[in-house]
Image (cartoon, rainbow, N blue to C red; front, side, top):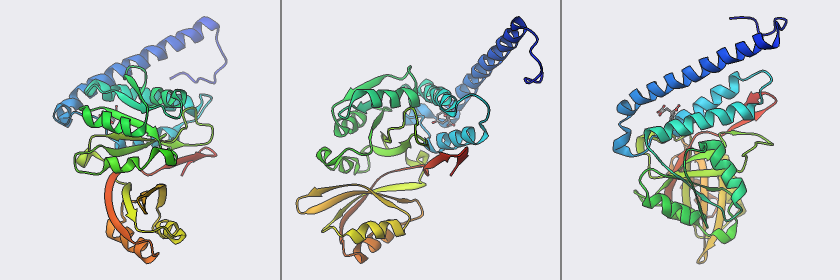
Length: 283
Ligand SMILES: O=C(O)C(=O)C[C@]1(C(=O)O)C=C[C@@H](O)C=C1
């Protein structure tokens, strides 16, 4: 391969190099498509109706961020690969992305386009609960909504309880950093992925009889966090994220010990461990 830092020959020669690389990149994409065709049969996607494998996607995005260097911004390579992966997922089993635009259409449209591309249809809705209902009614569709919905949205996470109800399957962006071009933190929901779900972080809808500040500390001691809370007929409903190794009984014991007794705990999803990018490194 020619040394790219070698003294430029002339413009036409450099454009010739660019044409060669463009043709190679295009050929590689076509080859990737052929592999996806073979993968469809192996994954039996048509049976489950969903090709989305969030753990694998998170690992691919981590590898890209770790090996990236040079003048092309990380934002650009990340968005290119998100479009490649989002579209190859759609090629395996067509899906739409339902988005809650109650906080404004622009950030959600940016998020949907950045993470899933333009080929995948985008369907706006008025609330997170409407998004969850739309995903429940469709075969392999995805839904996205802001993690921080505010108290007026109500305990939307309770709509994810039940074996066949949609579940949280990812938290986006995969690579978190200040100034991310589509950086609104969103949850992705889909019909349950069963064995295909990644469980590095597990999410529980928890009802506690009364709230104590010590409860948040108890959850953080387990390496988790209280993501959202809302009042519920004299009780408190919370969405709690904990590392996958934490058993529900450990969470219940920790909350009970903080004098916030748990009256109900239901798993409502799981996602890959969060990745943060700072000073050129992932943590
Ligand atoms: O690895 C898979 O299972 C794939 O379907 C391939 C692929 C990709 O294009 O890289 C697409 C969809 C999945 O969510 C993960 C990755």
